[in-house]
Image (cartoon, rainbow, N blue to C red; front, side, top):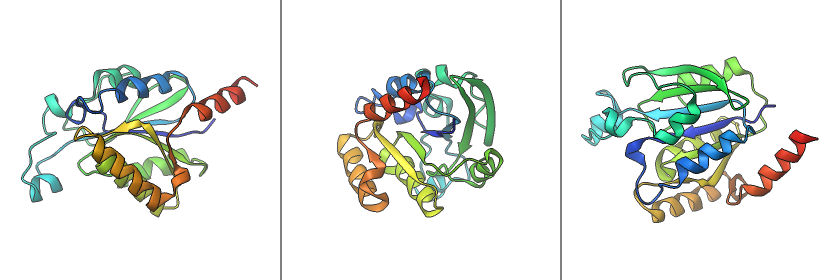
Length: 202
């Protein structure tokens, strides 16, 4: 089964009262064993990152904010390496999937290291499912970059969110509907899950 899942930047600094529901939701769909491979990403605001250069921001540069959310850590299957570890880290297999962690210092998950990993995995181009935070930054940028590389992005909207507020999340979803197509922004995941489970058990 090939059904790749990208879990984007579900880190402590990206979770607030506005999107605190997404780590549990993402963990539950991973535990259902319907995705393979699973690529987790984390954003580290390194000294040479664009955010540090242009915004003079030090957010997401220490373990307190850049650490992986505890619920996501549980389904990663291994402790995340130190913040200085960049690129792709292989994680133990679990929940029916090969698992990886991509560390980056830009919004998009589509980095040279990510593209190299995709080449090694040799996936069929049947869509790449996206969940995570923040919808208006890393999720949106990743979806657009996949789209422009002719890899179909499918955003599972109920498992995305913004720590800045529901308005940012909703505006980003509307933009995504315009830019990648409304059919690629899935508001109700359950019919997909039920279809996949029937196929799995057939």
